Amino acid sequence: NGNPERELSLPGMGTAEGFSAKEYEKEVYYSFTSFTYPTSIFKYDIGAGTSTLFEKPEVDFNAGDYETRQVFYASKDGTKIPMYIVHKKGIELNGKNPTWLYAYGGFNVSLNPAFNTSRIVWLENGGIYAQPNLRGGGEYGEKWHLAGTKLNKQNVFDDFIAAAEYLIKEKYTSSPYLAIAGGSNGGLLVGATMTQRPDLAKVALPGVGVMDMLRYHKFTAGAGWAYDYGTSEDSKEMFEYLRRYSPVHALQPGTAYPATLVTTAD
Image (cartoon, rainbow, N blue to C red):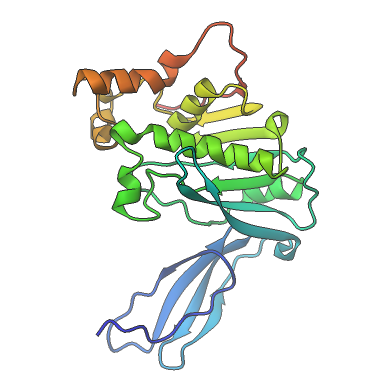
């Protein structure tokens, strides 16, 4: 009848998936992961309401050395944006911590906590990892998604810029120690951010980014992205809006941009 029966105790702040079973089954399996918890499988006794660890990979690091916080910061228009911040316990907030700011912000995609060994190497070496949940994603439903699409796309860049400004204001890092990163739609995010605010970060890592917003829809699978972006052929207003933030059109000669590594593939 849709009434909640119980809450499931999880190992921490993270992502749980699974919970699929037939009506007659007495057990169900699910997975749990977080930034510092390798993806593990649990067996859940439906009748007793208890979980036992079924399978966990061996990873050579001590999860207890790290902490994850979720903060909420204000974007340019005042909207509260959530962000995860992961780092070693006891880190000094002196503005000099190398920080990896990663986001996506589009296509109704939710960025949930997940384990990644390359991030563990970063954390072990004293780095901070920050992951904001920008508008355009799916974290708060379709209204949140649409708030970062078409003529609202600038909200996504504003949310990302505000995330960096929060980390700087709270002394987690400063511009000389900040790297911004993202892939595909997140590559566009990095490209737009570094052209709008070239002073914000020291390093920019746009991966497989959508960089030509006036012509993206004419190549490969680009036409399928028009629902989120709109196209330059929709209207004069849409053309001008896309041209303003299109990274390849926004580059200005003589500007000191961050050290940038653009990666792409066929």
